[in-house]
Image (tube, rainbow, N blue to C red; front, side, top):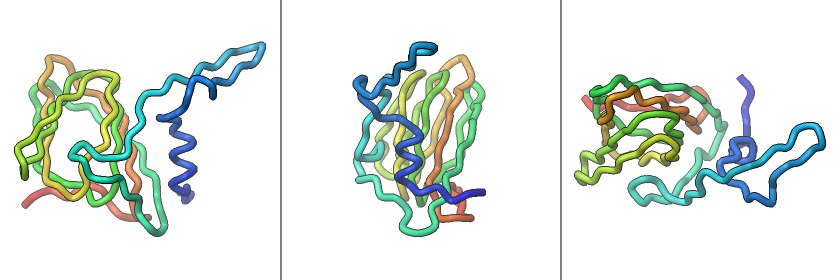
Length: 143
């Protein structure tokens, strides 16, 4: 797998662009719609990227209605776009919860224990992007 610098990921992901950045060709117009612009995680932490050998990992998640993920934390940045469904994420250290629905963008908390539950009647579908040190995993389960 190729190393992709964090700056290239942010550019390529195009999660933040202005309408003025829209591309236009006579054959196929392209419109860029800003989805999110974030500088902090869901719990208010500043976003800090891995400092060496950054690897970008992209995954699709599907969480069944009523399912609850185990308590876990992420040592590196994790971003998620909710393609479908309703997800409640609870920081088990503070008790604070956020609810995300179709179209929401999540910057997950870093190094804080949390868990997520599908509180809707349909599956939750997430597009997840991790930025980790090469070869590292970004989920640690609480024992």
